[in-house]
Image (cartoon, rainbow, N blue to C red; front, side, top):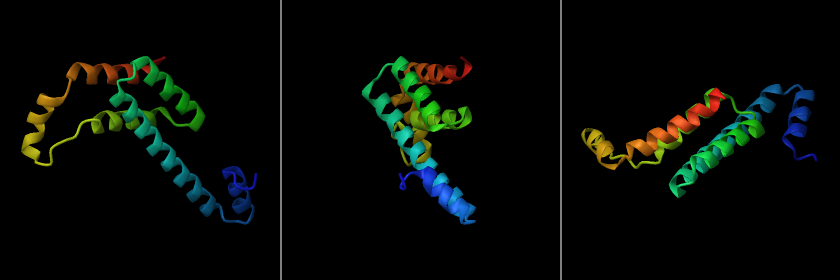
Length: 118
């Protein structure tokens, strides 16, 4: 298929335009990571089980060839963005105490980060 990313890469590498090929790969990777982060956020907001979220993240790591460090960052960003934070800095701490279900947040983080130690 001439529209595949592999073909695109090969074509431009053969033409001596490796930078363009690398740029396209990078853009594709950024899009994949954004989609993955959004899906993790959606799973958390739906209340999916921790087991399901872990299985999904493991599968995506293998499928998209995402490093553990990148996945940890995506998980952390997903967990933190699942809460709508107040724009006034002085109210953030108060809001965090009021709105976060700390045990749920910690269990999600603990479970997701433990997937890397297996």
